[in-house]
Length: 262
Image (spheres, rainbow, N blue to C red):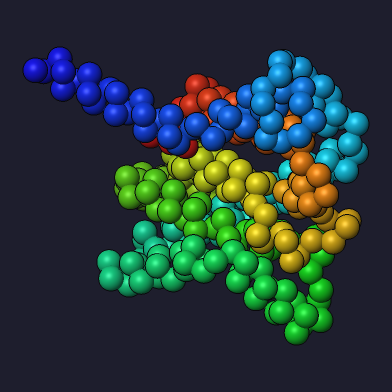
């Protein structure tokens, strides 16, 4: 009976993993299909759709734009999240900290399309336009709660006595942060940055109303591409993104001992 229970549990987990990863595996398999439509019956194996990406300069340019926007938004979000999480962990009652944490996480409760429209209207009212930095700001606002949650988790296990020890030995606040606090919080900081980068890179709704031809991100270019035609090249682009995200997760876990997932 015990063996049957373990077998049933293993089968359940296998089916659950297949249910979650099934669509992703289908997209990856389709990227090797030589058929010219999507979806289509599998006709063989080819790398031609991956080679076709290199012949589309708009995809390469948009990927570069997405990477820059995601890096800047993730860096800004992590800085803001660290300062907020540190202040919440060091000061105030538990009820006040909970209220402030909920307020800072409020962008998660608002649909992304609503956030992008609100930022668009705000920029128009102020006469500052949107452009590149408006896009970065919008992405930073959206991904900041994720970094905040990871940093709050890291600070919940942080022993602030080590900071007091550093201060008693003559270290200032900045040197204490640089030599003690930030190194100890490195896993949370790196995980927050990586998670925010991935979320920003693949984001479509926020970018939909805030991009221009000069600041088009990769999801926007992909969305425009499938409006006129759809073929396995889109599956190839998606597979490259998934491969990059998976590789980053494995490298962080292997070399920096940072886990994005449990």
